Image (tube, rainbow over the protein chains, first blue to last red):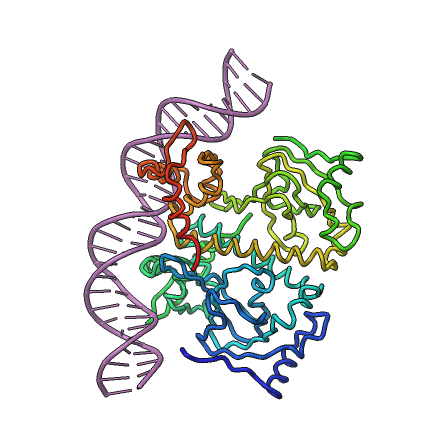
Amino acid sequence: MGWRMEIYKNEKRQHFLEKHSIKHLFSFPIEDYIEVHEYKRDEWIIQEGTRPDYLFYVIEGKAKIYVTHQNGKVSLINFINPNEYIGEMELLNDIYYTKGIQSSTKTICLAIPFNRCRAQLLEDVVFLRELTRLLSLKSTIMAAKYTQSLAFPLENRLAEFILQTADGHVYKEKHVMVCDFLGVSYRHLLHVLGQFCEKGYLQKEGRSYLIQQPDALRKLADMLRNE
Amino acid sequence: MGWRMEIYKNEKRQHFLEKHSIKHLFSFPIEDYIEVHEYKRDEWIIQEGTRPDYLFYVIEGKAKIYVTHQNGKVSLINFINPNEYIGEMELLNDIYYTKGIQSSTKTICLAIPFNRCRAQLLEDVVFLRELTRLLSLKSTIMAAKYTQSLAFPLENRLAEFILQTADGHVYKEKHVMVCDFLGVSYRHLLHVLGQFCEKGYLQKEGRSYLIQQPDALRKLADMLRNE
DNA sequence: CCCAAAATATGAGATATCTCCTATTATCTT
DNA sequence: AAGATAATAGGAGATATCTCATATTTTGGG
């Protein structure tokens, strides 16, 4: 994994700047400062514990936010999708423990250098308004995940995850990733998946699972909703 | 609990507006619109599931954010302290499940009516910049609580909580509240407190606990930190 | 001052989840 | 193609945590 991200230059850079223009997110001309970075699958966009030099805006691909605990456990905090920022925390807070960001597919980001843009960004009402909205969502989602994880067993959270990630009626996520994401042991994940099969909600097909009773899963997942 | 919040008028209102001026948090004159609300201990500032009419800024007191789950469990998401907002989520998002906010001491808030101020607030760079910072902190704290709750047993999280809330070397929080906050059953909380006593970390004194070995607790709590 | 509600306590048994161990099968690298 | 590494799989026993039941004590309101 000694790969280094690729920086698009000239026409290629220009192409992506135009294809995914973010002019509307700022009230000052920012495009001149922007670099376009491409990260390969599984490449680290930010190393855990190391302050980044850029605010990133994801335009293509998908990434994961990881944190490592003292007891060796690893948590996959959340996924990052196109049109989301990476590095806002570091932009806003001088003191912050930086989480690791790893691409899970080829990922293309617009990279805005802190040193050149920080002051202007923090004065920009258009930028701040959108960032505020994104952060409020992020915070809400985290609060929900937190309380749900304490109030419900894996069964409910896994049901929701299966429905959200299934491709049609086929579920085939990597177990290890799911363990980190749902915060349970590999053994236990397999145990609950096994139960779902026994109950006929899922059917194992090679190394993936076919959803046989989506309504049963939906019922479990709906328990997580409020009201 | 049929109490209704008190709204300060005239001199009393003026007194609090001046004592805790928030002029510096806005770039437009907001003070004319502000009401000053006083909530008694245990009064609901916002009912769960009901959209509030105000953005609140807490100036004195302390409140708790609650959410109720379908299975009957209740989560105390977090505390709100002076100089924090209540109702930002509703200001920023049209669709949002409103959490319940309950004062835990007499609480005085500056209440900014949405209908009169919303548009101006969302245009105000000073306001947005600070709100962005607060939200980034909130989101970070939630993410940390989430992953910690999955990665560590109650022992570690309780140790931290005891150290944070102890008054000198005396811990005496209400068990029920702590259960909602740490997301465990009453029975289990008492069990772990009992273990701390057996190990000599705490000593039970009537209905409170004396901290005997702060270093042992600190060691447990430090496990939650990153790096 | 009395009563109902809330808070504290504790036992016993169930369940959810973890740790450790051992195989087998894919996948990647060279 | 071979060997190394990651992913899948499942057994067995430990632990963390929950549920339910019950009893006592404290507290707030009339």
